[in-house]
Length: 471
Image 1 (tube, helix red, strand yellow):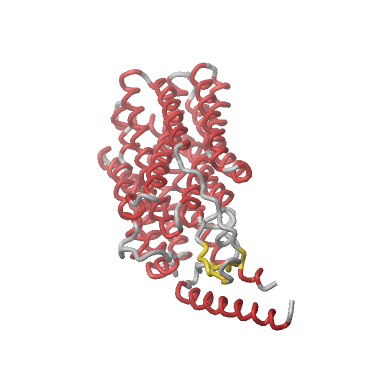
Image 2: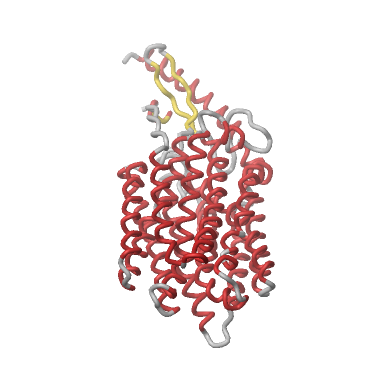
């Protein structure tokens, strides 16, 4: 190539670099920048500048690119461990709540239904909080909800007040769930990172029943002693998440999520009703509704089922529930590396039929050890489902809609986590707790159909970083 030609090429590169620098300055924040690439259009003879917002599994920041990112990632992990501990403790403590307050299956199941109100509120507030207060404000609100609710419950008030406290927990959980799933979901190696995030949820859920059961069965132990510990964990959650996301206020969030002109309160209308986006958002919301409902139903009713139907003692029943959450933890992490290799669509289409088969064995083979093994394996194959659907959202929707879509889907999922276990409790009141296995099988089938209705991921454009063009 001649010297003149080389100079001409470099002039093109310099011009594009200047444009890239100008655009980057406009959208720059301390946490995120919009990445640009140059694409050579051979027919037009022009270098075109493109904004990269594909949200692929290899794009985005690395969790360890800076000490700030590491601290923020660990703070989200702690928050998810708290949520896991909260959700699994309900099932372990439910028999003791029945005895303490003298409740029926239906009435005690209100602790599952109560978070529904908080989840509905979160569905409409999450986007507004992000745009006005950023992740910092959301971390403070969610953490404050946890501290308030656990402090109330620790004083073992009348049961209606306990139900109200769990409504507050539902709001805090749904806000944290949507925010941290969206934040981690835009990282590099999103499947693996989301697997770790949900692995910490599973770790908290695994330890919680054992701790709760130990506290209750210790001489002089009461069910509400567990919530002393939860209040302390919530204080740590609030302090770490607010401090680590301190610079991520509303202005930083708005600047980092560059997109078409949006209302000052967010993009919820575009997310839910725009023809190009609504199918993905609503199908993912229904998927997570079913997933969360299945997970909390299994985790919440296993102890009661093992005690009343399999006639196991309370400690052994608690160990079975711990096995379920251990399986979920291991599955989230281990299958988080398998899922991207075979593709989210195929992986989930394999995991769900496997879960249906395991649930059928759990239902039809009335042996304690068979039940324990199949329950643990169900946790293993449930673990990677949530990360897979979050990654699907980041692949199918533009970046500026990720928080809105994932936030809405997570909040709807909270409705499933609240409503479906309550439905099982109502059915169990009339027909016995054994009804929950066919109910779970039906829900797994419905979730599989929903997953297969998701659109295929669009082909990615052939983009090369600007630095590669200068080689």
